[in-house]
Image (spheres, rainbow, N blue to C red):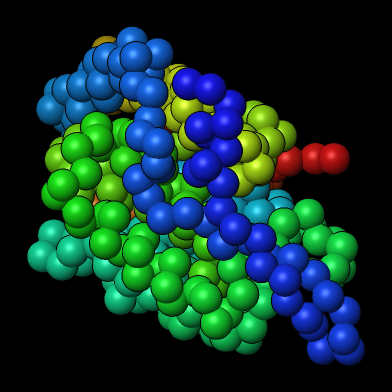
Length: 392
C-alpha cells in the first residue's frame, strides 16, 4: 500500500487554547476500522501462529487440575505487571502479603492500586457474562480500578471533562494531546459502535489490537487509561470467544518492549501505519501465550513433583497434603490462614509446615519467632518471572 494511502488514516489536529491563553494542538483519531482497509496478506501468517498459540494455552486450561487456581494467580501477576508500567513498585509477593493482611515491602498505596486492578479485572469478567462491552461497562470497570487513595480525585467511573495530555508539564509542551473534552463523546460513541458492528469482518485478534490503540489515543479518563486499555484486550478476546478462560495478558510483553510499544502507538497517529502495530501486537500474543503455556506446564510439574516427594517421605498425612494444597492457592500465608482454610487444628498446621520445610517445599520468610509467614518458594519463583519492578 502506498504511503499516501496510509496517510488518509491519520486523524485531525485541532487547535485549542488553555487557561492563560496558551494555544496547543489536540489529536482526534479517525473512527475505526481504518480506511483504506488493512492490508492483511502479511498479517495472516502471524495470525495463524497467534491462533495456534492461544489454542495451546486454552487447551492447558482443560488439563490443569484446578484451572481457577492458575487463573487466580495469573490475574494477580498481570495486575502487578500492568501497574508497574504505570510506575508502581509493587511485586507479586507484596500483593500476596497485602491480601494475607500482612505488611508488604512496597508502599501501601502502590499495593492498593494493584489490588484494585485485580478487582476491576474480576468485575469486568463477571459483568461480561451477561452484559455487552459498552461505554457504560467501561465506566463501571474504571470506577473499580480507581477505588483507592490515588484515584479518588481522578473522577473514578466518569469520562473526563477537561483536557489531559501525555508527557510534558502542560498541553503546550506535551508529547501527545488526546481529543479535547468537547469532542470526546463523539470519538467514544464511534468506538462503542466499532466494538459491536457485525459488518466489520475482522479477526478478533486484529479487532482487539485496533481497539487498544484507539482507546489509548482517545484517553477518555483523567487517569487509569493505560491499565484499562490493556484490560480491554483480554475482555474483547473473551467477548469474541477467542479465549474460553481469560488467560492472555500482554503487559509482560509491553513491559519488556515498552519503548517499541510507545513508538508504535505514536506511529499509528502520525503515519496511519496500523499494519506495523498489528504485527508487533500479534508477535506479543504469540510470545505471551507460549510463555503462559510454559508457566502452566511448569506449575503442574512442580505440584506433581512436590506431592510425590511428600508421599515418598512417609509423612504424607492428610494434614500435610491438605496444607500443600492450600499453599497452591495461597503461596504466601500464615498459620492462622492455613488453620481456617484447611479446617484443621493449629498443632496439625505446625506439624505439617515442619514437614514441608524439612522437605524443602516451604520456607519461613520472616526469621521471627512470632507472626511467621510461610512461602511456597519454588511456586513463587515460577510466577515471579518477569515481574521485577522497572528501574530507570
